[in-house]
Image 1 (tube, rainbow, N blue to C red):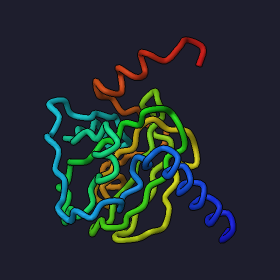
Image 2 (spheres, rainbow, N blue to C red):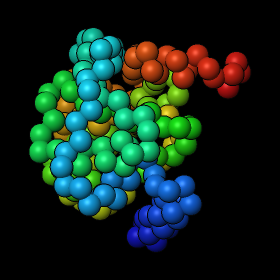
Image 3 (cartoon, rainbow, N blue to C red):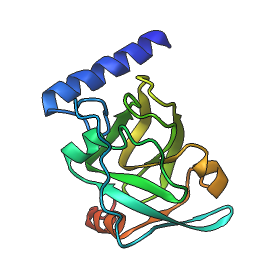
Length: 172
């Protein structure tokens, strides 16, 4: 397990060097101020085991925004999160260095379905991997996913997700 984790970390690091930084691989900036993006006008909506869930979201859709993410953010309000829109569908790797509050990371496929949900511990350098190809990652306050009843297989809906899902070639 230790060797597998080390290999995954090394692979992530090498990809970051090759592509000038990985989306979500936070901790690559000396600026210690929290980035706050505008809240998108459309909520992210899903039907969970507890009913319809609407979240207000900030959208990180470029490399600079994704590298900073929720670094240095002391608190994330309930019902609010940051949606990372990856350039391509692939395995995503995050860490929580310089992120002072624990988060739930919700890994989402290209079609908007939740693939997996993982917990990120505050200020940790441990790699949090989707372990599957995803197109989006939603970060919300730790414990929110369970409180809201979110689970793998739930479909998340938002205009950004729909636009990418609609571009997917038929049969894929």
